[in-house]
Every structure is written in C-alpha cells, then in structure tokens.
Image 1 (tube, rainbow, N blue to C red):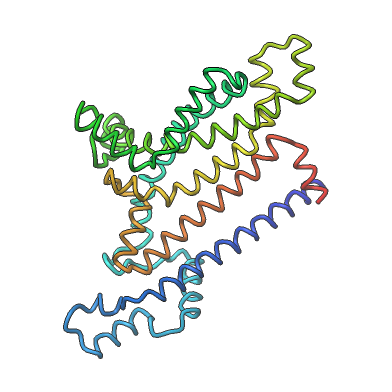
Image 2: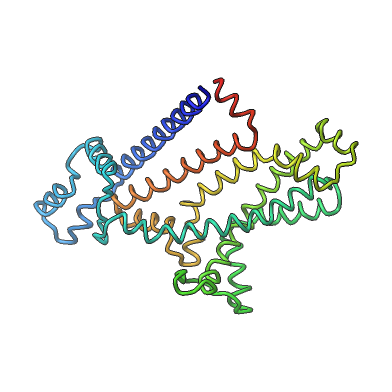
Length: 323
C-alpha cells in the first residue's frame, strides 16, 4: 500500500515535469519561428531566386504551420531523432554529445568549490553569529556577490594568467590529454562561477542553522553536555538543509545553460556557448535540441531535489503518502 502511494506521487511529479518540458519546447519553437530573419534566404545565399527560396522552405518544412512542424519534431524526438544542424549539417545529437561533457565538468567543479566555501562558512558563522569572524565572512561574501562572475573572471585572468602566468587564460584541454592540463583550463572558470554561487548557499544555510539552533531540542542537547561539533553536524545541520538543497539544485540546473558568458570568456566549447552560436546562426534544429537538453536537465535535477527531501526528513514521505 505504501509503495503504491509513493509510486503514485512519483508518477504525478513526472507528469508535471513532462508538461513543463512540452511547454518550454513549444514556446521555444514558436519564438524561433517568429524571428524576423529568413533562414531560407540565409541558406540559399545571395542571388537566390524565389524558386530557390521556395525549394529550401519546402525541403526544411518551413512552409507548414508551426504547430504541425512542432508535432513532427516531437514525434522525431520520441524516436530519438533530433535532426541535423542547418549550419554544419551534422546530427544535433553529435553536437550535444561533444559539448555536454565540457559543461558538466565546469558545473561539477564550480559547485564543488562553492560547497567547499559555503558549508564550513555557513556552519561556523551560524554557530558564532555576531562575532568578528561572522562579520569578516559577511564582508567577503558581500564583495563576492557584488561582482558579476565575468568581472571576477577577467580579474583572475589578469592576475593568474597575464601577470603570474600560472594558469591558461583560454582554451580547453580534453581529459584524455591529461588530468593536470584539463584541470588547469577549468580552474579559473570554475572559480569565477563558485565565488558568486557560494554566497547564496552560505547565507541560506546560516539563516536556517541560526533558526534551528534556537529550537528546544538543541537547548536540551546543550544541557546534556553534547559536544558542539555533534550538535552542529548531527542535530542541527540535517534539518537546516532543505532551503540549501533547493538553492543548490536551482543553481546547478541554471548553470547547465547559463554559464554562457564564462564559457565565452574562457573559450570553453560548452552547451551554453553552443546555444548562443546556434541562435546567431538561426540554426533551428540545434536551438531546439539544446533547449530540450537544458530543460530535461533542469526538471530532472528538480525531481532529484524533491527526492532528497524525503531522505532528509522521513516525515515528508509520510505526508506525501497520506496526500
């Protein structure tokens, strides 16, 4: 019975996420169709006749209504076909497959650095709220949050690449060419993202931890002489992670397609940069395929975040089952 209720909740959530994917892809399809430029003219080149333009539109299906084309594209997607790029004529799946590992590695490293900064800073400042260390950490966090990541990126390039020549300013080295060379190319862009992302994570963790530390059961643990580290890491941290995990999931999902500026500054061939280039080239199949990938990643991460809630607090599973 309990398993059946849990399965029902999961299926409802998956149905909701499927509707989100359909809505986003349909909106993207309609928006790209409303672009003022004529992709048929771009493909045909200068001097193309009306017959040439009509032939291109017929071949690409641009003369059909947008909803019919979307339904046809959706049917191909269900069969695992994303079409070919109009600019390169390569399969869209190949372009996504070659660019995705770059974005995933950048995402992993930037979030790892952000967690290494946010977790200890949030725990310590919550325990010593109002202390000098708390104020210094808040000042540093304010400075990081005040600077856009592209400003941090250019500053680090000037310092670590141009002045001290410790790290490369641009370029991407595949992991197959060596771990050290690969990480050198990712260190600056990952830090440029992490130094902005960690601030929000630290603040939400600090706020929730301060509220949790005022609970009666924490006071009881203190009266029993429970060590401070155990109170923080065992009794207080776990129930204070709900907002933290939500924000972490949203940040991770947004970075899959949102690190466009960083990927451009450091010349990283990631998904964000691929999408921007596809938009400028009016490459409709590549735009649709990239947006589909980003949307699927976003909803999948949010789904995993919801599952994490149940692991952090079993009471939420009971609420979901009763609902």
